[in-house]
Length: 110
Image (cartoon, rainbow, N blue to C red; front, side, top):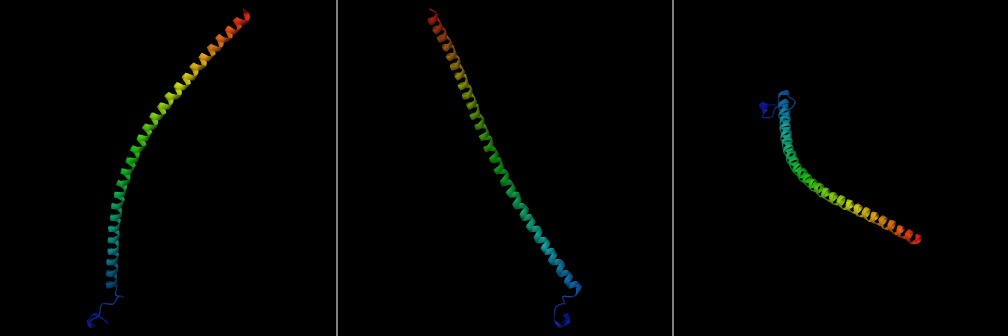
């Protein structure tokens, strides 16, 4: 059939098929661009949300770091105090033993 008989143009004619393919390709291209724009917008939102989460996590890490520093300072002070007390007790014990040994020697000499 041809156009004069009420039919449509033949599909194998280069003008008609070339226009259909190019319009179809343009439509697909345009749809892909819109999809990409939506994807970029979604990724941008996700990126903002993740940055907010990272900021919150960084605050938590900083808080924990401060708490750990305070705990370590307390432990250092406690350990230093215990060492100092143990050293004082050891020195006192050494002096007491020395005095006792002198007293024992004095008793045995006299």
